[in-house]
Amino acid sequence: MIENLGVLIEEAFARLEGKIHRTPLDYSATFSKIVNGNVFLKLENMQKTGSFKVRGALFKIMRNLDQAKEKGVVAASSGNHAQGVAYSSQMMGIDATIVMPEPTPPFKVNATRSYGAKVLLYGSVYDDAYNKALEISGETGAMLVHPFNDLEIIAGQGTIGMEILKQLPDVNEVVVPIGGGGLISGIGAALKLKNRNIKVVGVEPESAPKYKTSKERGEIVRIDPKPSLADGVITKSVGNLTFDIMNEVVDDVVTVDEDSIARAIYLLMERTKLVVEGAGALPLAALLNGAVGKAGRNTVLVLSGGNIDLTTLYRIILRGLSADGRIVEISLMLKDSPGELKKVLDIIYKFRGNIIEIRHDRFGLKIPPGFAKADLVVELPNKECEEQIRSELRALGFIAL
Ligand SMILES: Cc1ncc(COP(=O)(O)O)c(C=O)c1O
Image 1: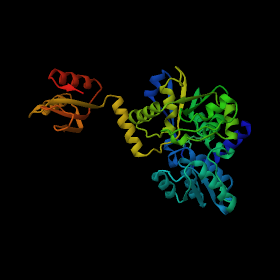
Image 2: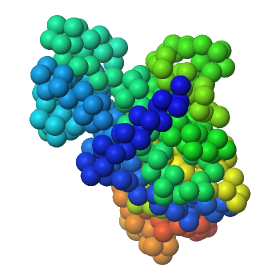
Image 3: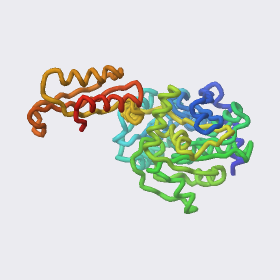
Image 4: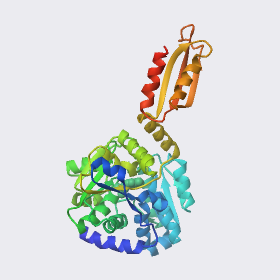
């Protein structure tokens, strides 16, 4: 099966030339140190529309241009696929209707509309939107662009594999997020056709282990996914085409928990200045857990997308800074007399702490008479400062809560 796919991937590579970005493959000194090998990042977060999805969508439309021009295209998606299809349609001068579930965040709806697509909000989950897209396709003849279970889509995503081979001919291991399985099927086929020894590893969030469960049972299993930071890969099952291809090209599949996903997003931002969404950070989360990457080997992490909303990003930054001891919460009881709070602030100042939030309560019902309570959130230059500040506060008789 993958031989035929190989021909299609080569065609996609030629046809997409000049229309999308050949994204960089960047060496990361920071992540290389963790595994004592060479780690490279394939930056699909820098792809047009902010994710790899445009590759498959554009190739699908280019290959079926007459039908698409005459009847338009229709797709269902709550995220990156929507933008990929909308962008590709605009580029090729084609009418696109994207059905999105009603709870889709406005920033994703607006991004899709900004590429000229008609957006129809329908149903409460992806399956409802997909059934509506099928109905529209049946009624109008519009070409349905499936997000993953389609050989042309898979071939488009596979062009990433060809790029990696050109950018790093002696690659040993490639780590890829799995949603419905289109991305890893395409990349895996491109790599294995060139060199069977390149290890292909898939990563899923613990909250949606569709392929892992299906692989273990030897048949496609529908799961009930839980919410995840990696919302881009939350599907109920893989496709029948992608299941067969993955069984041929994927050597291993691992899962990662939500904390490691958050940590990976944070580290990518802090160390490499890259904004990567949860799904795109899955490969790094697996590396941080020691599940992928080997000493002395060349490992590529496919950072598949960067479309993350700013409130989520803000929460992750705060959580990461707090885990690193760079933002700390300090609660104290102090004597209710002038100058006491100043003593606390002087100690924080001495260690170059910068106060983010402060609450000084003298009248709370649970506060004993003669005392006041102070709650502070403080930004610190490094982790060690927290203990030094707490120890000086103790020495002056302040009671930590
Ligand atoms: C950022 C990102 N990464 C990975 C995937 C998984 O791709 P696939 O569904 O082809 O496995 C998706 C799917 O939408 C995605 O948006």
